[in-house]
Amino acid sequence: MFLYLYFTPEPITIDMKPVFLLSLLFVCACACTKSSTANDDSSGTTDDDLAGPVSRPSGGYGKDGNYTVAKVSFASPTYTGKLVEVFYPKEATGPVPVIFYSHPYGGEESSYNIGLYGFIAKKGYAVVFAPYPTTGVSIDDRYNTLWQSFKKAVANYPNMLDTRKVGFMGHSFGGGASFALGHRAFTQEGWGANGRFLFVMAQWYAHQLTDSMLQSFPANTRLITEVFNDDVTNDHRLAIDIFKNINIPAAEKDYILVKKTELPGYTYTAGHDLPNTRNAYDAYDYYVVYRLLDALADYSFNGNAAAKNTALGNGSAAQVTLPSYNGQALTPLTVTDNPTPLFLQSKYLFPCGSTDNPRKSNCQ
Image (cartoon, rainbow, N blue to C red; front, side, top):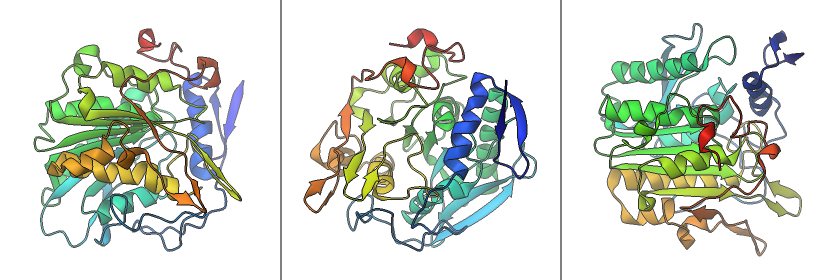
């Protein structure tokens, strides 16, 4: 059986093996656009308001910063014809904390999530976006492309990127990859000595990650693991496994479940493709991702205790409460330090117990 993918001008044909099913899901997430009020440009800014009736935060964590977004790029060290992009605050006068972002499978263009990168730069941080190939290479090759790209960015821009304060952030395939990449950066390169975190969303299988590595993350590592209730792609057990087995203490990590909200005329979805700027760029991007990221960075990099109450509040009101519209509150976040799966593995395209999962023995 063969699967035809139309994410390039010409269709390509590939064997329908489980790992390649990712291309259908994430190419659709990246290319099959729905109507949106977001109008993107290459600098990481958006001109129009958000989709849906709820506006972006006007204050506190999640509010857009005051910096101007600038961008530099360089040729990928391993992915011919592709550029690694670094978004940063134009007004910065010295190196700034940096977040290394690993995109979902198929999300090779930064336009897919340009709102996130712009938000990070507006807050005074830099973010490195590194594309990796969707097809034709191994998982190890993709990890290597991400790693070599991140290393090259650091080597190219020592006056821009402060590797003493570092975050690793990823979605789906990139979420699973963030643990091994972050561990290598933290333990082998010494990045994040003055602040480090992991922010992982809708995690796929985690490769190149041993039990001993999970038990040797540095003491100052913080973690947000975020899953989406309506995700039918990646089994939540994948995220639960890593969350429970990593050596980060409960006070410095939170497992967060996002549920949809149905308002008259608009639904804030909690599916696999949250967040992204191409499709439904809306208040969920800001309140369930950007806001928590903003607070986690402030806590990790600056030691702000108030920020911890929002990012890692263990279910605090500041963490879980979302805004209201016409008297109806958006569904609060569900936060726990002891997550359990809510659905059968059969719900998901990529179940935890699959032979493709190198950690399948850890499934609940």
